[in-house]
Amino acid sequence: MPAVRFQPGDTVMGRWPGSNLYYEVKVLRFDPKTQLYTVIYKDGTELELKDGDIKSLTGFKQGRSRSRSRSRSPARTRRSRSRSPARTVRRSSSRTTEVRKEKFKEVLEVRLTPVVRTQSENQVGSRYNLRRRKDQGDGRPAELEKKLEAILPQATPREAVKTTELEFGGRFGVLFWLLFLPVMVLALLILCAQEDASLLNFPLTPPPLHSLWDCQVFGIVLLWLLFQAVLSLLPIGKVVEGMPLKNGKTLKYRINGFYALIFSAISVGAASYNEVDLSYIHGHFLQFYTSALIISILLSVYLFIRSRWAAVDDLAPAGNSGYVFYDFFMGRELNPRIKDFDIKFFCEMRPGLIGWVVINFAMLLAEMKHKNLDTPSPAMLLVNGFQLLWVADGLWHEEKLLTMMDIVHDGFGFMLAFGDLAWVPFTFTCQAYYLASHPSDLSAFWIVAIMIMNVVGYYIFRKANSQKFAFRRNPSDPALSHLKTIPTATGKSLIVSGLWGFVRHPNYLGDLIMALAWSLSCGFNHVIPYFYLIYLILLLVHRNARDEHQCRKKYGLAWGEYCKTVRYRIFPGIY
Ligand SMILES: NC(=O)C1=CN([C@@H]2O[C@H](COP(=O)(O)OP(=O)(O)OC[C@H]3O[C@@H](n4cnc5c(N)ncnc54)[C@H](OP(=O)(O)O)[C@@H]3O)[C@@H](O)[C@H]2O)C=CC1
Ligand SMILES: CC(C)CCC[C@@H](C)[C@H]1CC=C2C3=C(CC[C@@]21C)[C@@]1(C)CC[C@H](O)C(C)(C)[C@@H]1CC3
Image 1 (cartoon, rainbow, N blue to C red):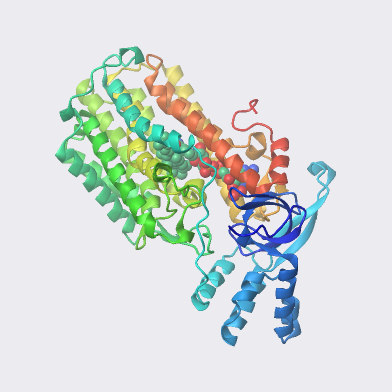
Image 2: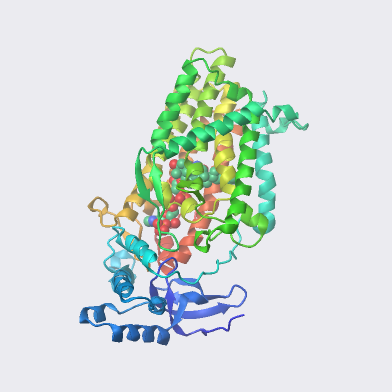
């Protein structure tokens, strides 16, 4: 075990996680169990750092002066301030490499700007705002980093950081979820199909095997996945870069989800026009679910096995505890790819999400067929319309997913594979599945009220998400100049006015209002159509807790101040 190099109270240079920037920090404590130092930055942010991410002040300064004495031009002497020793140590190769590295350091050099805020801005007084010099958010550092990677000798392989904070009930909790979630979806579908869909009427005998398995259905599901994969690979739509990874590199993604939706709609429409009976999906729904479940399990096993060969930098921070079931559930690899095909991004946005809309349409046809209707019921039309809008919106804004926790932080394991391929298409469709065989007679008043509710929810959801995305992309956008913000030590600010000043997650609130509108469309006869709403409340409350935990770590005191300014989490009036 390595010796403890620093003591509480020592002032050292600490690397800012995920970057090559070093700031002066004070050591607060060392945890021998996790081998992590808790350090405090000048703005009060507390973080846990590995030994390798801490340099002694003297070593750091020596590194700096060594590099200064080697510099020839005064300009370079000026630039060599706040230089990372890690980079100094690496400087052993040719002169050309050195010159290129100097250029790179210039970009990474940081500036400490005291931020003085006014009385009206919550009396914060002065503090430091750390910004990358010359990085105006135009992607130049990432590009330079890539060039640098290409010219530098390979760095010593790093060890993966072990996941110590276990979520979802830890190693035993995930065992429960692994078994419970697939069974719960099955139970939900069985109940939905019953004439009396009351919870009290749940059949106690298990369903016969033939109602769960059909080779043809399995083949159709595979074909659907293949069809969506081909659509995702079509050279249509722009190619964008994702968020920088731990090693500073970025991955490229083709954004063509909305085209895929249109192609899929045309294909399904053409099939229906040519008398392909889509209500087949309704009649074989359990078999479709079992097929999707099996595929998600096989995919998770494949992902787990291939993660053994993944590079340290490609591992997700949350899925590397060393406990097999935990890591299998959470996912070890962050962005598993086969060549340029990103499996996680594909699964999140395509087969399940577009499948959801197709299944809804199949349920609409099944309702008309079974109830001998010339037109679908108003409730079925509302559910189909609302959910199509939600899916189309998601695919239209597909690029924004690249900044979300699921892509940036979570590994791709059973939770997301099952969630994307089985949970989304078979539980999110539960309202349409329910309506296909249960009536919901809505009065004109209710129809209008539900439509208004969905419009209000959608407005809040879209405005909040778009505002945050636009602000993150360009905080100095004149269109956003009316927003009040709180600066943080990372250089990013937090919006504290408008929707983001009303509650801390207005986008969740909007999503929940929409979910309520969808459920209300199904009437009050049974609780089953409210499943989606209940799931979303639980998921978003939990997600909110996870996100706030991450933000507290990232933003330290500034986050605490944000919480004091914007007191409610998701629901106004509830802390
Ligand atoms: N139907 C479903 O099953 C689900 C739907 N969703 C929906 O997806 C959407 C996105 O959700 P999700 O990714 O969880 O969360 P958010 O889009 O809310 O992202 C949270 C992040 O936003 C940034 N942030 C938080 N507060 C502020 C602020 N005041 N100002 C600026 N930035 C802030 C922080 O990241 P940073 O500072 O690093 O930028 C934080 O980590 C939501 O609308 C949600 O309803 C989500 C999950 C499931
Ligand atoms: C198995 C579980 C109990 C939970 C699984 C959860 C996942 C299915 C969802 C977690 C977050 C999601 C999001 C979307 C789809 C569902 C999952 C993966 C989303 C990509 C759908 C499209 C939206 O527009 C969105 C806002 C981008 C969604 C983001 C979160």
